[in-house]
Each structure stands twice: as structure tokens, then as C-alpha cells.
Image 1 (tube, rainbow, N blue to C red):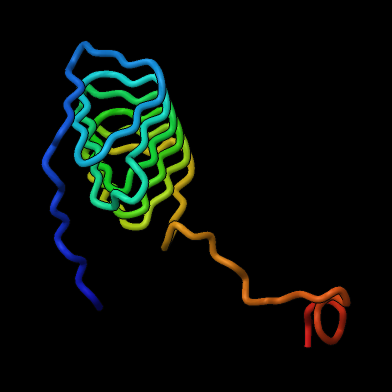
Image 2 (cartoon, rainbow, N blue to C red; image 1 turned 90 degrees about the vertical axis):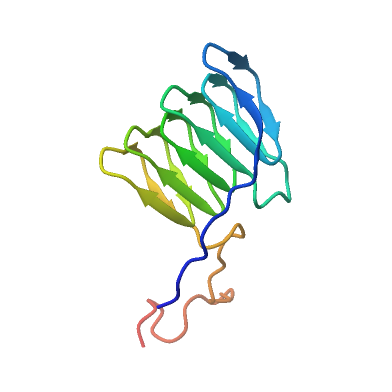
Length: 143
């Protein structure tokens, strides 16, 4: 069995402090530490696969999150899309669908919604190249 590389988060470039509320969509690069509140969608710049969002136990996001790496100890009310890694600490609360590639979840963390494993950002295609005449032999897919 292979070993996962140790994740090294980039330096935090932006801090949204306790008591701060941002209304509207927010896009960032590098690292973002959230102690406050964001009412809107939060996303990392395209192509920044090392971008990380750290949400403290005081942090709250009301909207969708699209960030490659997420370390969550606060709340997300909305869907969370992580193309690389999600760490859910003991106070983490997600209300919505969590899409992940690699997930670490501590005792006490909650996900109130679906967990969807995604190996890559690209949607998977089925191998069957169906034709107009339907399934091969038997008509119902059996052989």
C-alpha cells in the first residue's frame, strides 16, 4: 500500500478576523485563515493546487466552498468541493455535500449531507460506448 505525501500548507497570506463579516463571493490564492464569517461562495484561484482554507472554530461560511485543501474546525453551510485534501477537526460542522479526494475526520466532526469521493476533478466516463441498437445480445444486458 502506498504512503500519502505529507501535506505542507502554503503560508497564510490572508486573515479574516473574528467579528468580521464579508457578504459576497470571495476568491483567494495561497492560504486563507477564517475566524470571521463569509456569506457567499468562497473559492481558490484556478490553477492554485496548493491553496488552503483554514476555518477556525469561530469561523463560518454560508455558501459553497471550492478549495483544493481545507482544514475545517468551524462551520460550512453549503457544499464543499476539495480536489486534494480535507481535514475535519473535532468542532467541524458541514451542512451540505462534501466532495473530497482525501479526507481525515476527527471524533466529534459532523457532516450533515452526503460524502462524495472524487478521484480527480474530471468527471468519470463510462467504458460503454452505447449504440442506437441498445445493449449487446439478449436486449437486457445479460449474455
